[in-house]
Length: 114
Length: 114
Image (cartoon, rainbow over the protein chains, first blue to last red):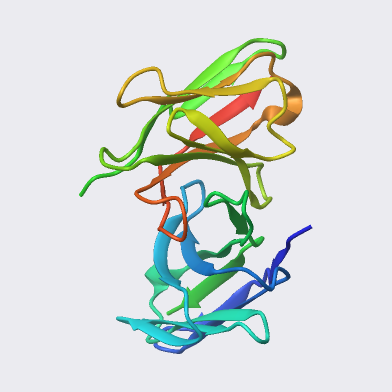
């Protein structure tokens, strides 16, 4: 069973702080990694994706990937109350039959308090 | 900006009834997916669809489920005889490429089976 694990939280940070969200995955051959944000009762909304080892920055968000450790993280700088949501890590598994299927973690609830 | 749309937003049905959930993927996308999320649980993959046939399906996607692309724009999920445990949020997603390409999610249909 290919698993994606996240700390369910909740993670609480003050406004302006850095929020750090972590995710591990079990399939060593996984190739693509995605962070989605989900507000309560809404659909997943893409924040960013990463394919290669290292860091990828997009505005206040930085994704970090370490394939050797099977670990992907998301840093949110200058956190705002509007960032309060559940953050979903999703992994596209390798394999001949895996036609873009995403495996999701259970999500980390982030609360940014003023 | 193009987006995935889904109808209806909410559906209440009696156990044993058939339901059809509808999706209009982003117009130039070629790969289509259904996921579901039971309240408080992970987003789970159901099925992927490309070139008018199923590419991959999960264990959840049993004989009670079917998908169809009846015309050039719609993509449907049919549940033939609903069960109580089918109550969930159902998300349609689409991507331009089936590999690592980003999947964009629709707003979802909340299905309640009584």
